[in-house]
Length: 112
Length: 115
Image (cartoon, rainbow over all chains, first blue to last red; front, side, top):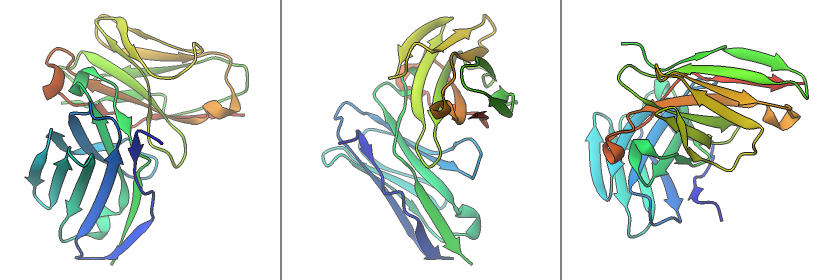
């Protein structure tokens, strides 16, 4: 079993839909959780950063962490074609002073 | 404010050769981490440099080595290249002093092709 599991997709939804992206993990020592967006052949761009369990909202994006279930989610409201990209979940035990463990990434397609 | 920069953008090498990739961290950051991303996969952690020392290492062979300079910039060296080393190599910077509150920001990557 890999430390972080993420469905690679592709996930295709119509413009304006609510998108739900998820990751599960096995290492209970993870405390910091991130979502990155990566466009084709580019570097990952940080979207959301969360410490421990709970919710965090930033514009159209909401990140949720449930440490008891070892499950994290990213919701995108009012999805746009420009949101089409690969979304990577990442986690670590010590924040910036630690190597990140990534999921495989979910390829998201927003249909106009 | 310049973000993380990497050079070169693309590189083509043949098996057995050696390669050096370069990274300059985001202003105010002192920690550099390197990742390898194969096509269709998430990035894999190679190692992290802080105060010119390798602080943490992932599951990569000794063919992968690095260096950090006093200005916090960093190099990744790969010796005896294999076809399987073909990937996007990503550099990320962060602040190593604050611990948990600091996250990693990525550069655009260097795409290495080994023939």
